[in-house]
Length: 44
Image 1: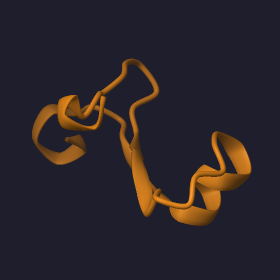
Image 2: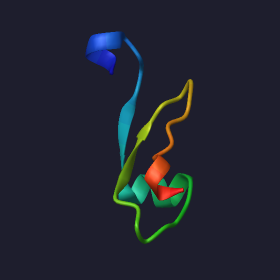
Image 3: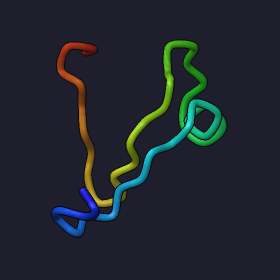
């Protein structure tokens, strides 16, 4: 995303997700998009 589109995203570890956002056992990490949101439609 950053290299191709210049969009500032970064990958969060499972510990960062649990400590900052939601403590979910099934979370293995996430991609942080500071200016938007991404939803995995099959997990809704």
